[in-house]
Length: 392
Image 1: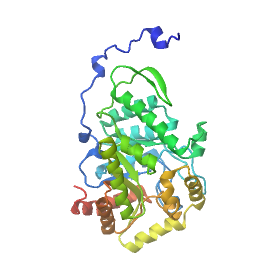
Image 2: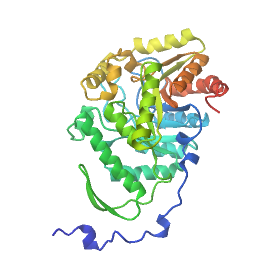
Image 3: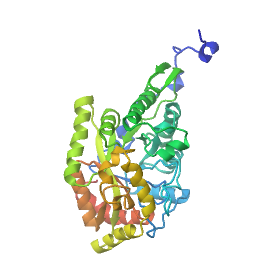
């Protein structure tokens, strides 16, 4: 019979936890803005990666330096934004920009910004095949404590084969990636929630006398996000996460999608889920100026990088992007396939209101120049959103 290291050391899974390792339950609705009462939540997306959400050489002062990243985060925090969501990227998409190739790792990024901010929720985005649940659960808990209960974890199954190959992984079939993801989040959740030690043996993981202390600051676990929009992705989100992110092309499709996701979560798993969207926002004093700036992004677009994304998304590697692959490549160049909002402050407010009416409870977005345009958004759009009853 095999003797484990725990047995040799005499470690007992029933040993009581020391008093200092216990904690009172913390109501995450009081610490994490993602569970707050803003009618239309707002966030920034992709501020950890070069070029953000635009595959373009359009003029911008946006840079990947820690000073610049921190300034964007603290400004969003000061404006009352609800969340910062990074893009997990290990390899750029080539082309003339090597889109997103210069980027910060997201757990460390989140830890730094958690210390630099006071109110806003800070997410890490994790490709599940690249991080073991034990490591991820511990990192998430650490950041949750740094932030005082403002952390969120965005779960990504790993859809870019060249990135998975960097880790020596053979890319799994689409639905099998979600099966792995289910095992992964089940494992992490037990580490976050179970007292004492436990053993585990599943399709993808095994371990004996597993434990993790301290537990997260938020109870029962950090906020969980996922952007899966395929049938397997919707199933995963409905079963596991607090917020599903989606981008669709029309308000009618958005309304149908949000109803589908919420109904599945409620009917199949007896739980509630939020649905939010993402995209590029281009806001200027006049509609003509806004559309000219948006068109410049496309005119100076990196078609090589966009073509590489299309090849990956269109090859069946990511069924979450099927709807966008059939649309024009401009959607990727100007907003990473997201929902574009282009116009005056009044028009941007109106569009956000329409998204909310269609069932979206928030939007995380990119800007051509995050730092400078965020100032304008705060001065011109935020007051209108409050007047419209979308924010308070």
